[in-house]
Image (cartoon, rainbow, N blue to C red):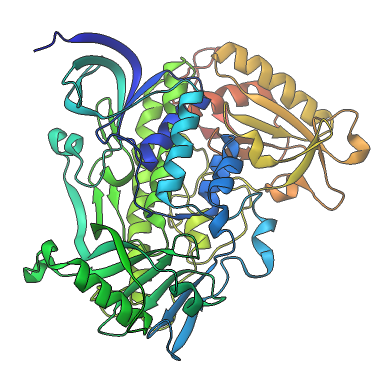
Amino acid sequence: MNPEIQHRVPVLVVGGSLVGLSTSVFLGRLGVPHMLVERHADTSRHPRGRGNNVRTMEVFRTAGIEDRIRAASAVLADNHGILQADTIAGDIQEWLFKEIDPGGGLAKFSPSSWCLCSQNDLEPVLADYARELGGDVRFGTQLRSCVPDEDGVTAIVETRETGQRLTVRADYVVAADGPRSPVRDALGIDVTGPGDLFHNVSVTFTSRDLAAHVGERRFIVCYLTNPRGEGALLPVDNRERWVFHLPWHPEEDEPIEAFSDERCVAHIRAAAGVPDLDVTITGKAPWHAAERVAERYRCGRVFLAGDSAHEMSPTGAFGSNTGIQDAHNLAWKLAAVLNGHADAGLLDTYEAERRPVAVATAARASTRSAEHSHPGYAAPTVGAGRQPGVLGVVLGYRYASAAVLGADPELPVLPERFRPPSGEPGARAPHLWLRRNDARVSTLDLYETSPVLLVGAGSAGAAWQRSAQRASRRLGVPVAVYRVGTEAEAAVVDLVTAPDVDWAEAHGVTDEGAVLVRPDGFVAWRVPVAEPDPEDTLMAVLGAVACRTLRGERGGEAATVGGGAQV
């Protein structure tokens, strides 16, 4: 056996699919050295996991990769709706929805938009960028063991081609190793939830003639209801490459081997309603839809992210998006702790924030699958009427944790209906277009590397700015401060609003107040008006968000925030 080689790294990421690669990108953007290991030899070759929602595209925008992703997905840029039909060539058809963003109303709330980019197209973009940012990304490398202790984690990884083993000592491990997570199992973390919902076989195929029968219908997916051709058709290039999801029933002892090429061809022809359709099968991959959430997201210095932490029905594309947003939430916290800008208690807020979001989102995904009659899903009875739209799930989820001050713990994690962001603590910060140094930027573009304090143009804003700089130096917690104002105040502010925009009103404060936004773009704290001692207030606020236990410098009293809320 080859001798073991020792390697030291702050973060080890296990799993190189969408969530693991996103974790690498986010860590790389924050300057955190890390290694990623993935047992497969390369990125995914199967077109799946294509729906990237607007929140995911926002975090990719902030990370500087949105344009590359849109370039990789250009072939599907005009596909928007979900169609339900008996057959492709038949007369019974209904659009469940025809446009993701009818009327373009989403532009009021976000600088980004939805993007269809299949996993096989997205993963190479992420992998290339992760390496550009300095990530040590190793495909064809399998985790063999992972043992956490009080000071770190000792892992053994193996290069599958050569059998060379490497002992890796990491401060932290992020396990993004999929729904059957070996890391989760080794740590003894159980899962909760209904479990398996339904099973499909994803079949890739080529057909030159199918596009003529599809015509101008540019759907994301078409659900086919003909019993002989039940399933879901997804275009890959709108021309000759396609994916079809066939229902599979292993619970009835149906073997995967039953899905021969001949059976799949006959099924696809029945779904198309074209008996002699040219079909060439190019690949098959079984997959399982489930609703499960890990009981814990953390075991010491090991964190679960993505499918290792939660499984969701595919309807609505919530699963991969929730996983990517897990990575975004965790990356800035790891960076803050590793850089000494926050205490280790900040890492406890990862589970406190992300697990409730996963539980609520997984339930909403199952409900949506029932509403859409997803092929193969024998769903329980659904309540009357359509369920709430996806925008509340995508942009409306809320956090309540030690890293948020003033969040209402009684509010649901997911709202029943989408409400425009209003600057409330624990919610995603509002999007406003601003001008900075003659460049047009969104407020969301400001949030990535450190907490951001937004204040007004007047004397109160100047006092907040001075106080934040002093509090930052005293605490060792970096904070970026931006004074925001109108064109008339351009000489004294950092950011200039459009003529019809009131930044303070949009964030629920006055021009004398202040808003603190975390690096992930969620509001950590706000105060509507000026404070008598802004430096002490910010000492307490920044210390609380960094999960530091502070004592006041004047007689040892506990610091207070916002007119009396004790920290």
